[in-house]
Length: 261
Ligand SMILES: [Zn+2]
Image (cartoon, rainbow, N blue to C red; front, side):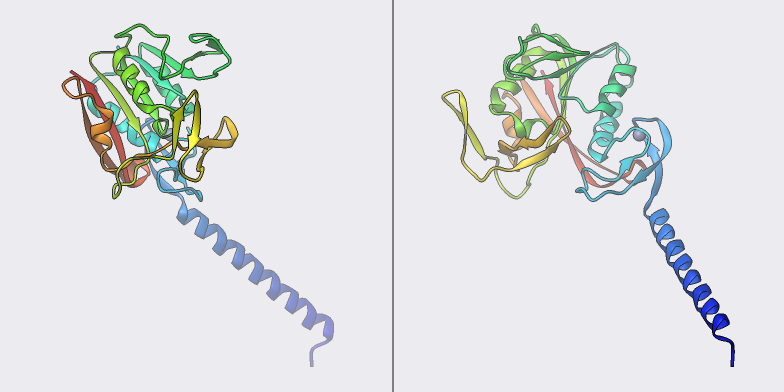
């Protein structure tokens, strides 16, 4: 019969070992969930970390913070242009990682946000105040306009799309991402009338780093998106579906390209 203090110390040791094993297993699981790959924005081999967001929002690059839809857009951009060094680019409501990328690689980069209480064209730090539906820019100002998950939030998408076309040089492109439901036609969740938005369907919000309340979804884009975003005879829309596990894009992400004639 062992003295009680030995029994207790053995039990404590066993418990400690079990705890250590559990911790090791937990760390292994986390390490396996990590994904190594090449980030087209960092232009480097990086680690992608999973998160509890949808497949367009995860995994995230630990270096630049990009998510699959950012990396998909940059992959398409570099595929479309042999060099982006000479481009004059406008991005509306830019995300930090792509704004930094475009600022670093393109000849001129204009980033814009919209604050209704400020003068159109006013400086907002390094950004410009711009209502996409009434832009302060001259016609044919840009080679490329980028919008990332912006179109679903615009109170009046059609005037904004026509304005984007007006500011593009002939042959210029509007490259964008937007969530869409392929098995239903586009529908308005809210309608702009008498200077205000009127809700047609229950209000839905997307996470917005600049607004703790989130961003109201105005349009559910559907299978007819390509026909709605282009102007007959003046521009055409191409869809690029990007699936690239090596870039941390684990499910297909759509990138839309509207090119002016
Ligand atoms: Zn990155």
